[in-house]
Image 1 (cartoon, rainbow, N blue to C red):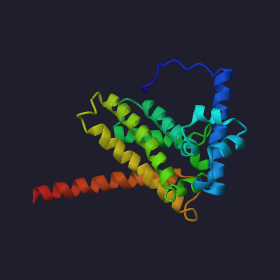
Image 2: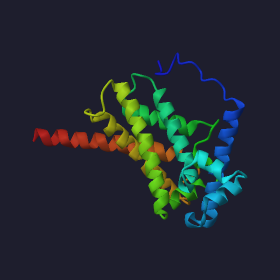
Image 3: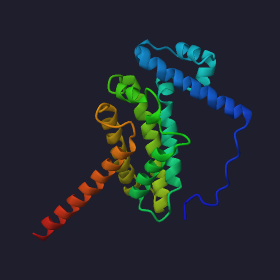
Image 4: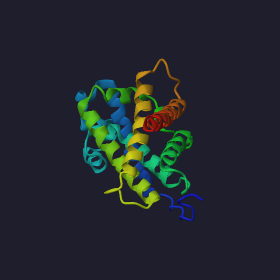
Length: 223
């Protein structure tokens, strides 16, 4: 049984919500395009608003700055991973649940994961070159992982303020995903466009290394 079975389906968006979502998406896309075209330092909020055909004031209703707008895709996908994590079977071990949530995100063809979108491999690579962009990315990543910790803690029926397990699971599982993303972004000529096989391999590496370490520790304890 999945954790969210029996939860009512959320009501469809009304026209105002649809318009707001589309405006936000247009601003985020404009920010990505301009950052890739000019570099972060030469992009202004005004230019993003103009590219999206909205006012500066409208931009400020959606985003705190140009970095926030350019990285909105990471926030949205973090939320989707967490939604998938909530929906995983209740009896699934936390690490496997997180891995399964990431797999669900990558397999969603209705709303494809960000790595399928044009230019975002280049934007992810730019994180290493733009300190302000990297700082914004880290804030978004930490917020998403904090929510993941709360979800895992709820699954375990524990309090993450004293129980290390939720933080450890999320730190390891999210770290593996980050490692796969960085390898994928830097190896444009080596890896296929689909990120999923690389993520699978990365999680297999984590589980395999944990098993080898446990075996070595067990042998050492017997000597």
